[in-house]
Image (tube, rainbow over all chains, first blue to last red; front, side, top):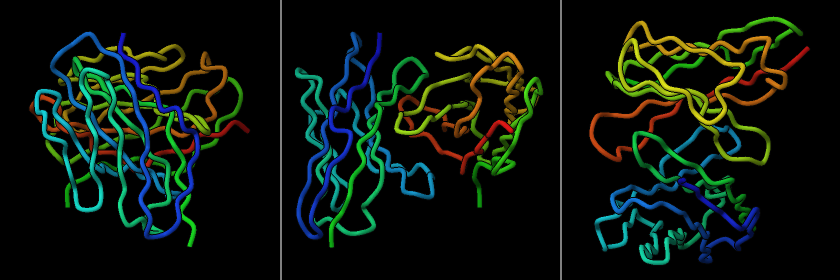
Length: 112
Length: 113
């Protein structure tokens, strides 16, 4: 079975500071893909970052980077220089066998 | 611009009534998906389709039905058998190739009158 767990229902960060969102997953496959999606109050799902499991190098997209630990099945998202516009729900997702498996989400609050 | 269009944005259903949520894409994607999102929860897969005239049940298919007669369209019917249909519904599609990210519509909010 494929599962994705986000153990932090809600987090807060001060503007311009750095925050890390946690995600662990379970799969018996060696070839899979991992994603972080952002869902602002508008409820539109926006891709933040994508990681291929066979690549050891951690993916980065501007202020967003991941710490991918394949052996530990961990895929955390680091947001640097947090901005007010980063406030949203963040979902971790696993892709395998034509299906996506989503975690329950972490609500990120950004304090001015 | 290419994208996924879901309609209507808000939908109300009476008890015992079937309703259909529309999902249209002009991205030329083969794979399409329907998700349900409840407050404070993640996305749960209802149905997905990899190709026209073929679809598979997801984790919570009971009380729902779909069709895929055209590549561009993947409508979801919420039947009267779905006892708790109030939720936010998201449609998504995926480009060809392994592990491509999903593109999402703006969603439909379904409520019971």
